[in-house]
Image (cartoon, rainbow, N blue to C red; front, side, top):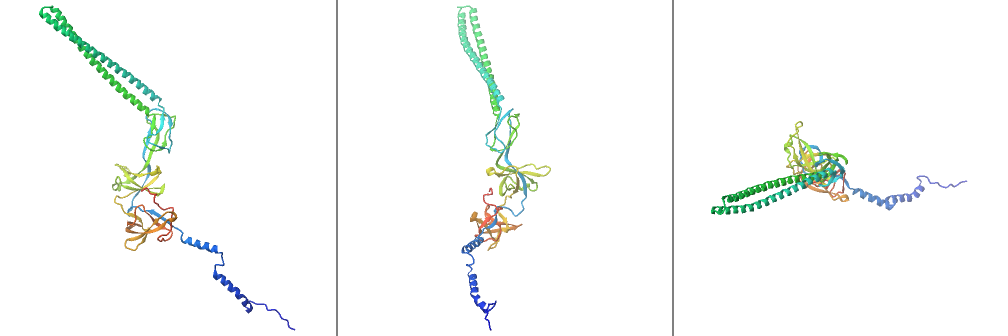
Length: 438
């Protein structure tokens, strides 16, 4: 008796292969197409992300082109100070009743900043004016006496003329025998007495005129006293002699001040001065008006161009160092006092731009190399190749003879090699136009 059993397909059996062929073909078809494994939106996003990665801006560090020298230039350190600094002091005795400003406040030239009690000064002015009025009255009185003496002179002249005429007439009568000699002599005596009175009156006029002159001189002197007293009264009002900033408030309202007591310290920050000590070996290379490059640690991204304002005629006897004053502009008055400054004196014959040699790429012609500069700002910033003609090289620096101007921003280094037109972004260490005071 025979039994029939169903045939079970085994791995590798012909029946198994025949049924699996369509499935394998289907899987290869799916893998080959590729687009059926992920949604179409996901594939598109990946494609755009890869495109953005290829156009991502390259981080670069820029520097500003400036003239310099391949030789090492000595750097001196100093401290910033206001270009002018004054001490406001009391010019008269009095109690300080008002102090209108405090440390850090801006003041204008001629501005009232403090007020002293001027009661005593007002009293002195009134007394001086009273004395002046009394002296004016004396002048008036003396002039009146002169007028009286002059009137007496005129009256005596008239009397003298009459008596002289009478004496002459009587003398003629005596000579004619019409009168006695005694009468003629009496008439002459009367005329002589009138002449004496006239001389006395004239002398009196001169004396009283001298009195008027003396009185007027006293008035003039007292007038000066009044003016001086009024001037001293203005000392009670303390005004600023310059436009600047209050550096220190030395006293407070209510204090009694004596002449010479300090009230305020003011500084003029329209410009900044820096005094550095120069060795006697390099002193001969510095001239008034010479350019100097100044760096401040408080503003590391900025460079300042100053000039030599003064050179001390005397060196320190112990250190043999000569004080040299450098002046730099202070637009916006952002630079304060007491900041550390680093000063380099530029030789007078420097006119060549000096840059780091690593910023260059080899050019097509001899002594011509390529330098990348930045064109545009923000997302529009691009690296632009510019051919430059170079000169001497030394100590990692090179002279640029043409193709670059002072103040141009050029790329010093980048995170990867650059190509012309490459999108770039500036690092925080980059120097930019507008950050230099030149």
